[in-house]
Length: 368
Image (cartoon, rainbow, N blue to C red; front, side, top):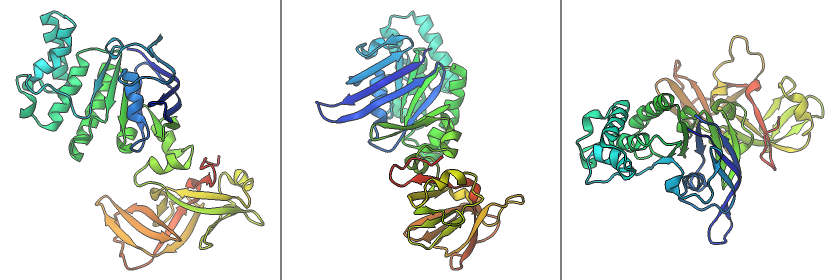
């Protein structure tokens, strides 16, 4: 196995503008890294550049200690799993998994051992004589993954491999991919637009937007300490609530919303000293849905209390999602499902002051 290093990587098509700009990522040997972002952010293009399926306009790409900018895809010792499985319909599962090994001229017995070992690992050993048309989408995806495993490559690349599966099967396959990473102890790079997949699979997540890296960190650090407003809104489901306003320090430190309907005393906010430097400046307040509660915890003293009109209620069984308007924004609170919430009555809610986020309104950078 080997690590992958991207140094100032850039990509443009036909002398047009850069679609990938100055990307620097150092993926360690045996690390599982997820590239995530909205459609058009450049994540699949970046993966195809690593695979050798897209040319590199600028910068350097290393697999292990070897610079591979001009190395053909067939000589990079990588294996790629595609969204559409890319199986040969006229071949059996065994033949699909063995095809690449036959091209390399490996002995028949070694091919058989590799295919059977991968099939047992993926629990598809009873399907080796079937053809792709006789299998479900989840089974076909396992075959595609098995075809990559038997090659024993330096790096595994996954391009949105679960997007064609239903929700239940996606959840099951995520667990299998985690187990597979532990068993293979391999370097894996995984592309998805689904932030739930990113949070549950990655040792580290790289968030992309319009060809730029917004932040790269562990899942929990991204969630709890987003570098900017884009990451805060993209990572997390439901997305973070935002409200524009300004910091006032003529007296007790406070946040005032742009429309003047909301004022929050920040004198007990943990980073109050930092916010004072933003006196009179436009900022954006952010708070996650789970940090707005029906009542504060037993030892919580730093909270903001507000009575809000309820716009809609979604009962999810284990939790209740409450939607309420706040100036021009729609906020979401994730509450316990222990108590029924009538949609036609105002609701008293407590905001955890220790969990507030603030962003510079002009740069969108988090205020630390």
